[in-house]
Length: 158
Image (cartoon, rainbow, N blue to C red; front, top):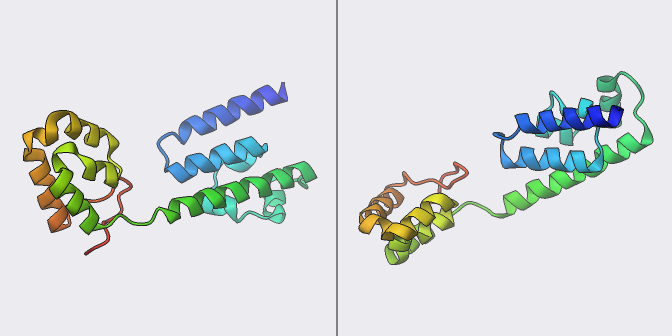
């Protein structure tokens, strides 16, 4: 019965994070895979969870954590940090590369795929860049610096 309640609680908690950042989704998934209790997953940001110690765990739970719980916490923290490092390794997108892709392959929407806009890239691919008009608008936005990557980060300047 406790396991079923825990699964329901984890499901509800994970459902509330659907609109959260990708790293938060990866954090929740990693924590659930490692068997971290639902009590520890509530009211914590990703940064707070990754720096949690067994002492913090004791204060939050109100009891001494079991060895299995501490091991699960540490394993989940390791997975989260690894996922965050992988996301950082992608690096910022460059304005010059986006411009060159837009100039030479703009009607195919390749610059949009590069920036992470998969849906818009497919739409441009199917409409040949809005008969070229959409591609021209994108090129102007890239040159003026108004175009950003899909994650909201600014493009790295020339």
